[in-house]
Length: 143
Image (cartoon, rainbow, N blue to C red; front, side, top):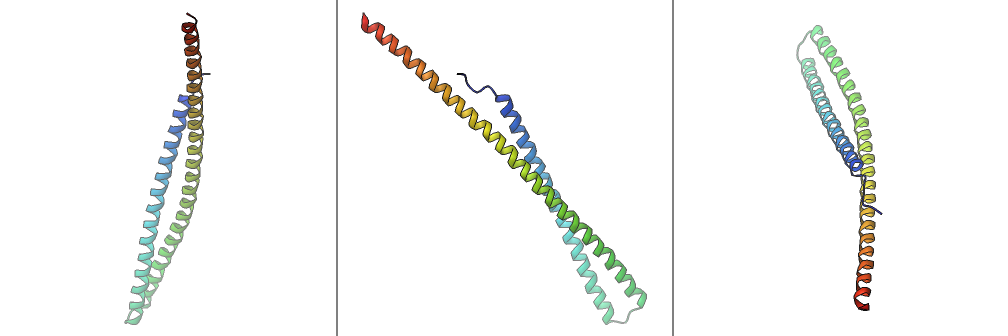
């Protein structure tokens, strides 16, 4: 019976968990940035729609309306591309979260093992000490 001897493994598991937590944080930051970009692109598209509607109400040339339509198409494509990137990043965030949960569970298993082994070792030492005290008591009682 001996105390927990896998401290280096436990430390390594903690490092893996910390790295997984950092990866999750980075992925979440990237997702937030993409969402911000998507919001800006959607706002720009709405502004273009309002401007186009104002141009249609006023006297404007067909060329100017065509330019608005082309610009709106470009912005729509940007919105679609950003929406796709956000969806992909959401999946990466979910993967990183699952990875963090797995790393956390592995660390917790080792911590429980350490606690159990240390508790068993303390019990072993206490039993050994009790036996020694009993022997000493018997020796002094015989005198």
